[in-house]
Length: 239
Ligand SMILES: Nc1ncnc2c1ncn2[C@@H]1O[C@H](COP(=O)(O)OP(=O)(O)OP(=O)(O)O)[C@@H](O)[C@H]1O
Image (tube, rainbow, N blue to C red):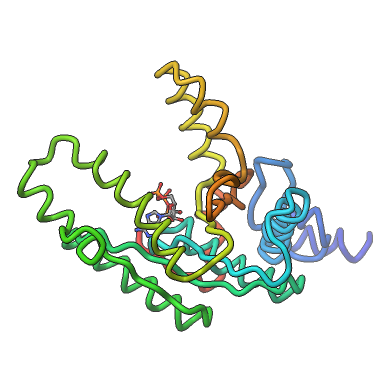
């Protein structure tokens, strides 16, 4: 009996990649049994391949990460700063947070982003609706009620991200939209019959004709894996 087989007998299933450590999960994407370390590496390197194959960045570029304090953008900030170091992308990375002024919601997640600023050593810029538009979301809701407030907020946030990115003088803005988000948007656009948006919503980079293009490095990343990844990677976010 080989050493690996003996170990497998003692500890249960072995990782299909290193054939040394105990498998901690099975990846739905590839059906492989993997230990934690091999999963982290595969997860990160897949994102690296997406970045390289789609030529998302050029050396020396300034890149803002849209940081909401939620799982997707927090994992994105961590992975991107790791890959920037590991593969010498030569990027200047920044965290950009929009404070919509929603008491009990954004104030909590902003605390997470401030922690990430220190942990990952990335400069943070917070831009508020109040400073840009003179209104917080709480004040807008008081005025217009709860109906349609998500539409207002979505339009304002999009513009606020563009304005924050311009203040930071960045070349690109990246967001944590993942494969599940994109699948949802595709279905929504089919149901709405919005052919123009249907074509655009699957692009990995948009706004190339405008001042600051936006990229989605998690375009092919499953939400489930983004949730698993931080569990043991010391990545902290708000759910
Ligand atoms: N207030 C914000 N400030 C900065 N970026 C934001 C903000 N809200 C959303 N974003 C960006 O847009 C992406 C998609 O936002 P969405 O509201 O759909 O949240 P999500 O899918 O839950 O992502 P997350 O887990 O990062 O919050 C986020 O990953 C982030 O990059």
